[in-house]
Image (cartoon, rainbow, N blue to C red; front, side, top):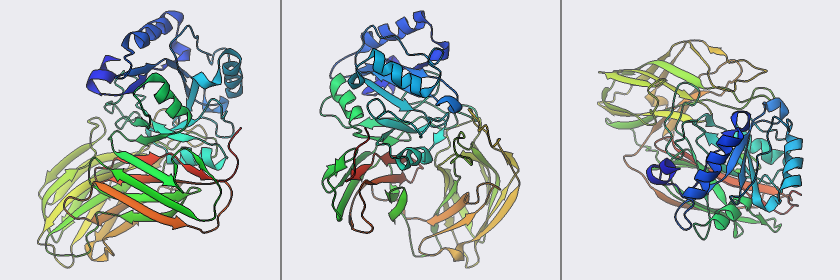
Length: 456
């Protein structure tokens, strides 16, 4: 609690121990600490635990209480399937005082969700970035918003460092829009899905459709006026707008069209984390390691953008050569390159070593795969409209890629966007957006629904 309040400077937190390891004495310690650190108007800790079952039985779910009282966890040891968790929570407690949040890496079962208990899902944690999980719940018709978390198992919420090759990236944050820093206001914000998720940075997001804010449902209209705003912590790279999980608009904000003798490039690796089989755990971390060589230009500087894991990431520049290791799981990992004396035939050669996927709660239908060595030659003359991409596939995931952007120095940190959508309007359409910063940080808004019926 002290770390969350004083070091991470969080407004709210929950320490949610796995119920399979949680005894009565430890629960009492957690409850007492939650009550002790409760400081209305300044810091709000929520009492909770993690219902811990394999994905075949419903997956891991955090359960939070509105108030600190004499509640006792509904343990997966006594209630071992997801439907029994929901039923027992209804039996013991008022649903208005409960928030259930399914995990993504040991995933909740998107075929079932209780709308009275489960207003939110986790889209990111130390385990990776899982937009597919959000899309899975939404495509099944569930009315859920998004948050992110740390899940670092080291009691360092809000500023959790990566460890090993499973909890391999910084922890995320869940932002709640509330009028007060109070227990009820924050909990009401979670229940109402007035939330967004980030990978650890603290941007400000605003989003509405026909004047209806994120997490809410607007009246049906065939014409949808969509507006959003991002105030970021680093220059904004990309904003992407989704309708029913399909991209309907995207804007790049860092691109530089003019090629000259001096160029700033952003080299980004990306891999898909969607489970290969429905119902499986997500694909693990793809590890990218090898050498990058700059040909036909002088490499003045090379700066890794999100290299925080000393156990799995490395970066060494020697002249025009870079030896590196990084990893991705539903996100990107980038290196910023400053080149001078760029010739007409300048290129970047990437030689990748053989690597194996990793990650805790590994897929149980598709095992972690070995990715063969590969090479790619990227000619800078092939950059069109400021960027180019090359797929570097794994057998099951053909869209893993490396992208080069020719970018400006600096960039905008406060961007508003507006558009109108009147194409193929249907009851229950939903919209949300994602923003990616130059430093590889991501944030996702909760959706806005238009028409249709809410989950019951």
